[in-house]
Every structure is written in structure tokens, then in C-alpha cells.
Image (cartoon, rainbow over all chains, first blue to last red; front, side, top):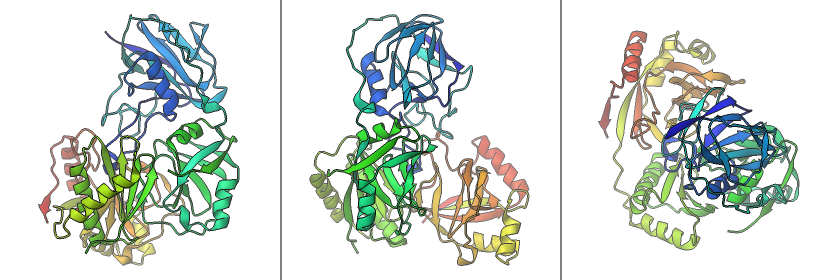
Length: 285
Length: 241
């Protein structure tokens, strides 16, 4: 039976996300998808879902949710305390939910993004083979108070007592692995060593499109002819700022692409907050 | 002529192919032809290709196990494609209303350029613009061919809300905003057509390699076409090139 989860409080910026869109970049459509694909993937893994099943993604301040029928949920991602009808529940563990249960999640202690996975996934509108919210593509781009998101109710709860410890993304994730970007070799030695030997600070310009870093690098490179970019591409702007493109980034850009984060590093940096530090470690393919 | 291409590994799942850094139609045709042979060789579930002025980014669904053999495969595809064969392309007539009520920056823009509004319209509607690619926003066309006299630095302070359909000039480029967006270009007209519709099979009816020409229309006509577009009852005019 199709039932709904109701948004009692929307939180700071709460969306539906899955693995994102593949095959529509040619129309200029961003990839989108969960910011931390590892935490997102764990939610579906623990639930035994298809790996592209849609989850709720919250940002720092999680939503308050009311479930209109029985199901099983899992919480992953940013570290926090969560309560089902005021009773504390564990993260990374299947949680049984009954009709009219209220899920409250406290302000996130560590990390930026968290996930609420549900048995068989949330069934919001699918557009271009994905349920990931994006303005001008999906009818909504963030969840609001009183919104209802459909899901298939489920009674076959079996606690697997799965012993999954929280993944390592919050530990030792300061040295982010990068590949050379297409324009890396246009940099001089001083610029290269500054890029690879210094510690960078996450600025307050953070969203699903990009993360800007505070420290600047003297930029002597000209703009490039508008060229393709991907999530994880680090651009050097004319003012010397480094911009790390994230899941909702455009498909093309005109700034030199100096570094490319590994898939793992994209998930790491996604969970970093304003003022946190990171550095880049060059690796070969 | 075959170009000397550079193949670079871009990420775990992507390979970048670069043509010499130049914007011209010969490069575009060579690149689009190669793109077509890549897409017909590989299943669209395995790869997608992002194209721009002088590069193709080949994105694979899973990690590339062996970069060198993937590049060899691509190189052999390139050597087999014939330069003479040009991908089919179309010329589209794109209606634009340059009435003051819809073109918020047109008068100021004309004054800055020391031209009359009529001269701006004439210069903007004269060329056949080449569509080099789609990017920046869903359905945004990168167009080449803007008359030098209309080149103009972007606004010092970008507008927070540029309306969907706004026809604008920024630097040496002109374009149409396919969705509402902030933007720093000078808005000189409005186009009643939708350039991005995720509900249709081809989200965008124009493809890279096509050409477009702007046709000046009156406000009444703009409103009529807009109503028809909203009712899914309008097909843009085109001819095969």
C-alpha cells in the first residue's frame, strides 16, 4: 500500500536524493544525487534496497517526520542523536516504524549531510530517470512543511542485527586524494606546491553546487574555452579562489580545472563544515 | 583533415579528448562526428558524452579498468570516421520580441553602444548563429556568431532574477536563458519558446551543430506563441541544412 511520510518541520535544506542523473549532461542537466554517496549507499545496503532507492537528505539541521504507516528506516551520514517518539534510536541500524510515529533528529554534531533511508525507497516524482531534487527539473527543489512523500508501507521487519560501524568518513579525511586536472600542468612550480603543500579552510560559501576554499593562489592562468566539468573538479578562478564543484554543478565551465578529487574524496569533502581544514594529496591513476 | 587530439584521464570514470584550443566550425563538426561514432559504438547505458567547443568528456558508468586500452579503442574509432561526412543539422527560426516592455536592458544597452534600438535589432537578427554546445543551465545554448558591434562587458552587478526566455548579450556571446536564473548579461529581448522541457523525449529541441536565426516579432505575436507553447501546440520552424 502506498502511504506517506509527512514533513512536520523541514529542517535547513532537506531534499530527496538518489545516485543522480546519468545520460542527460548533453542537455546541460547536472548529475545531482546524494552529496555523500557512501553514507547514502549504506542506508540502502542495510535495508536491502536497490542501490538507487531514494533517501531523504538533510543538511546540518534535520527535519521532523511523521510516518503514516508501518515501515523500516535507517539513519546514516552526519553524527547526531535521533529519537523515534522521544525514544533514542541508533544510526546505521534498521529501525521499525509504526503508524503515526514521529522521527526527530537533533542538530548535527559532526558532518554536514545525513540520510533517512526507507524500505524500498521514497517514491517522489521521477524525472529523467532520477528522483534527485533539482530546481527547474523536479517539481520541488526542497521539502517544505506539510509536504508528503509517498512510500510503500512494509510489514516484514526482520532485525538483522547488522553490525555496521559508522564509516570512516569523519576520521582522517583531511588529506583528500586528487588527480591532476586537465590544466594542472599550466601552473608554475610555486603554484603547484602551494596547491599540494598547504592546508585549506572550507569557507562559508558551501552548497550542493560547490564549496569555495578560503586561501587563495595567485592565478596567472588565462580563462579557458568553456569546457566540460564534473563533480569533484577543482577550478581556479581569476581572483585566485579554489572552487570545488559538487553534485549539483553545471556541466561546463570556463575556469582552469587544476585538480580532480577522487570519488571517495568528493564524499569526504561533502561532509566538511565551514572553518574545517583539508589538504590535497596528488595520486596517479 | 584529421586533428591531433589529446587524450587525458579526467577521473576514475571519465576520459577527456581535446582538440586544439580554438573556436571554429571545422573543429565543431569533427568533434560532433566523433561524438556520434562514440555514441553509436557504446551503449548509452555505458557512456555519456559531454561536448563543448573543443573537447569531449567521455563519462563511463563504472571505473575505467584499463585507460590505455580504452584510449586505443577511442583512437581507432576516430581514425575510422570520415571527415567528409557532416552530421545532419538544422536551421531554426527563433522568434524574439524586442519590445521595451519585455526587453528591460535594451534602451540602456543601445545608448551604451551609441546605436539605435532598431540598429541593435537589425544586428542581432542578421547572423546565422552556430550552436556550439549546451551547458551552464539545462537547455542553455552556447552560440557563436554575435556581431562585433554588439560585444559588451557583462553587468558589474548581476541581476538576481533573469526570467526564463530572456535573450541577452554578455561579452562576445548571446544566449537565451532557458530557466529563471541569476545572470550578468544584458537582456535585450524575450523569446516565447521553451528550450528545456524534461517532459519531452528530447529535453531540448536544438542540438549542437545546428544553427539558429532570431526573428523579430511584435508583443502580440509573442503572447500568442507563448500561449501555444504552454498548450504544447507550437512547433518551431526549421529547415535541414
